[in-house]
Amino acid sequence: MIRAQLIRRSFAAACALSLLTVGAVNTARAASTAAETVYVHVDAQAPGTVFPHFWEQMFGSGRAVLALRSDYRRDITMVKQATGFTYVRAHGIFDRGVGLFHLDKQGKPVYNFSYVDQIYDGLLARGVKPFVELSFMPPDLASNPKDLFAFWYHPNVSPPKSYALWDGMIKAFARHLIKRYGIDEVATWYFEVWNEPNLRFWGGKPAQATYFKLYDNTARALKSVSPRLRVGGPATAQAAWVPAFLAHTWKDRVPVDFVSTHVYGDDTAQNVFHVDEHIPRRDMVCRAVDAVHKQIEASPYPRLPLIVSEYNATYRNLPNVTDSAYMGPWLANTIRQCAGKVDMMSYWAFSDVFEEQGVVKTPFYGGYGLIAEDRIPKPAFNAFALLHKLGHTRLPVDSHMALATRRKDGSVVLALWNYAPPVGTTASYTFGKPQGASKQFIVKVSHLAAGDHATVWRLGRHHGDVIRTFNAMGRPAYPSREQIKVLRQAAKLAAPRQQAVHDGMLRVDIPPQGLVVVVLH
Image (spheres, rainbow, N blue to C red):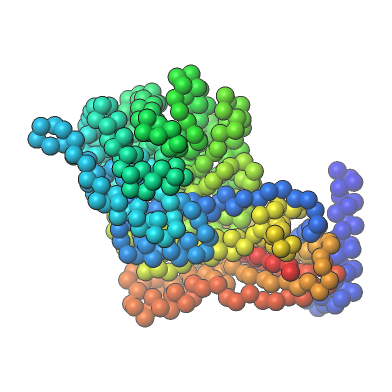
């Protein structure tokens, strides 16, 4: 401990001396600044570790039938361009609105794949593959027609009244997809059985045993069509049931190709870990990911992929969270903590083309999406766009407020942030500034090539945050077309700033809830 402190003090002294030598810090400014100083040292030639972009490979969305809408498709194109993501996950491919299944007068199944084809054709045409959530129950197949979830569109969540009919539907669905798209394509998709069966989304009693029966039948039906189809679960909320699920599939020799589960920043420790502890919003997601990662390692399937098929800073509609610049540092810190413990994470959701609570009533209500109504990017969209710039080799860095990476061309990309809690945590927007002081990052990058310079992108309350402009308009529920144009312009990231680098040194000041991405090249 003492040695580490001495090393840090020596590094700080060296940084200060170097910066003073090149005139990068002037005395007057230093005297007037109350910012905490954060020292970050990176070796540009360190071996590093593989750093796949697990946080941006998949996004959630509103229910599947919304994929037929033009605004949904425009939004998915925007997010694809910003992140290069591959998969999208939606509820309700079997819902009444998609019209896949019904029984004729003789009680025989009739399949209609018209909307299924249009939904998946639209995704594939935009370079995105389905992560197929096999839900919910078609009305004609439901064991309890009145067992409806409280979403605005009221999906049926009861078990099937006949597993012979359910298995037949799964097989017909899989065969149709293979016939239309080819097995080589469909084998790259994922098939996840149901959604959050440990909550009210599943009406079987007892919940776990009846879900396992649903899973067993579904997995075996899919594999009977082609062993190349990838199937997994338990798709639980609050990182639940994973050890029991894997013990069950192992014991009964049920196919499983991946584990999926969900966690949100405001899930409680009581619900996730069954302990009386307060876990902050910034830590909850990765605490749960770490726990499930270890559960898989301890299971009979220690190398099974872990897919967190829903995550966000909140599962509620909190405008000071999901609509705000808070999401930049929250996302960066989540990436830092979860790296190496998960194969893919699906941010919920890519767009506010979304109807779980009903038709959207105003652009900024705390929706989960990266893009608000009327194609207005939120700060969270800009956070994903900036963090997409990170390299694919992670470099060691001794800070919980920084990520250091290297690209294939040798350039070093840093993410630096100043986390501060949300200004408000209610469904009503709270006006005000984030608490906390600015932080002054003094960065030393060893072994940079001569002549390297820094390109600096910023996200925060004054950079790439549309909410200030929306507030200035009086937060109109229905912005005019002219206001929408102004809001779209205000949502854009500012052009990056070029900054000189002297002897591998640079200084960056970051206000509370600020995120900065620096490319050294």
